[in-house]
Amino acid sequence: MSVDILTPEQFEASAKPPPASAAAALPEARTAEPPPASNPPKTQPPAAPAMIRPTRMLSAKTLADPRSRQARADLKTFASDERMVQLCNLEAMDQIRQWHADFQPERVVPYATAEEKITGTTIAADGAAFRSRKNWYSLKFKCQLAQDGESVVGFEFLVGDPVARDKWDELGLPAVH
Image 1: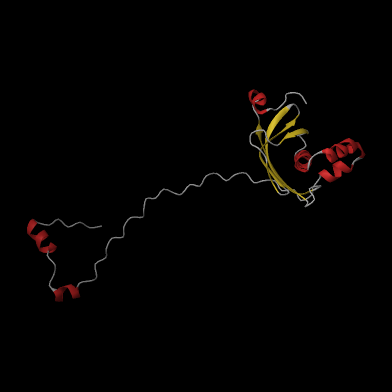
Image 2: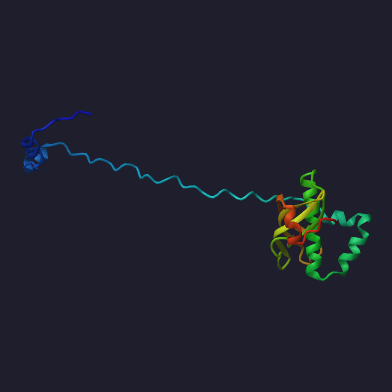
């Protein structure tokens, strides 16, 4: 880059527009491009962890086992909505156990921090919890039942953090099974 130092007279002479004929002879002036906008990069909130979507439903096999005779009998006595919730709880325990062998789920509370939502044959439990090895863990699941409400046909879940021990009583999570 070169810099010319001008006298005040030279500066004023250069600031005057040239005559029309001279302007045509001058090369076209280049206007400086504005500096790129200093917009900070757009940050997106961290993506929510992806739900686990098993392809094989497990609760029917568990209920078919001869050792589940009493559970099958109990399910028949429940009202429709309660039966669907219990089937989904069973599916949740089976899927968590299958997904991660360190977990041995023994109980699910679908309404621990938020009431579960039943819409037709779908149950969404965003505030669920499950008990495994004397600890409670947060859980989110969505369970789709067959039209008759008698079997699970779709399921997805997400295991969260352990529930703090000092929250168990407040959330109705028993310390002993």
